[in-house]
Length: 467
Image (cartoon, rainbow, N blue to C red):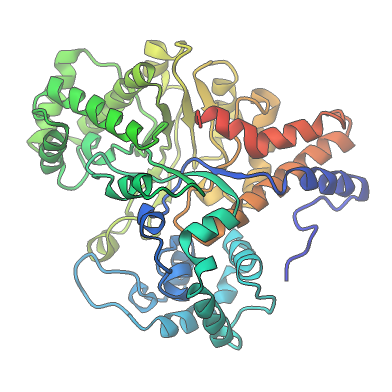
């Protein structure tokens, strides 16, 4: 079903070079430092329920496309946050998915799914309404076998390490279970995502702060105790392998406010009285505080701004967060990061990875910033740009100014477990194609390209995330 030379250049010499480079890196272990798979899968190691719950129900890349063509999320089994009814017949969900699979033509989701069907489950026919039941039955039968349980797939996928993402309000019980299980076939670590306790606009913010303090064993309702609670919870996360923090703010704004001003904003946030401007200022100040804490404890700071989350109020009310209605916005990095960078950006102990959904910022802002500040690295083409063309554009616009070594390899940032090998395969193919073009056009020595290919596929991500 899949072309063995997919995504390689058309020109024969460049294609030969790309093929040779890909053969060097295709079997390297997968390092997945930033994602959203459920640690419960690896802790309990129970079979995945059925094909629909594996491929459709949890994957917003899939169901947002169907939603755009008028398919209601309830008919795809997406859980309701408001307690309302949703489809529970998995075969019915699967058939609806198959009927609409054509909508994914030309998208990276199509490639990831077909890669999973072929390489994970051995299916080589074309998926669609005529083969829906055949695919369902075959995948469902496979999922009952021990070799298709989460840990077995983890090892089969050649995943060296994977990071999940948890809130400071998470007790990390699944990570504790993994740690105590004695499983030696895979490394699963957590990452500290403090949005619920740094964003005054996050639902239940005041209650979140109370729980945050209880979990840390301090009074987090005063500013000093609040900062101490972060230090305590970060240390707890490090006990379960965390090497990074993760910050999904609406903007890249940072601030370095006097303590009294920060305290006043915190007090207003607890009372629910922050204006939109004040909430953004507090979030920005906390990014700088998180950077200072990273200098102390060594956690890598990831900033991925620029998404207007939960764009549709009705969908948010009915289904909750992460349901495909997060939309990219224009993002400024040069001005917005300056307060943080002036405060701590030259400190050699600090490592910050920047992501963007705004491709116009690549060559204008991100490449010049990461190309000079020692604390900064550019994250890979991300989310909406986690695609062959998005990755190619990223390399073309970033490399001239930032080079390869101010970037951090690839991360898959997914909830869809079976797509992880597919996503890394796409990234490796695109990078090999880019390197082959540089070699074929006389911009990179042929004997240098294999080293760069290995760095992009494996070495840079381990170094950047301190894994």
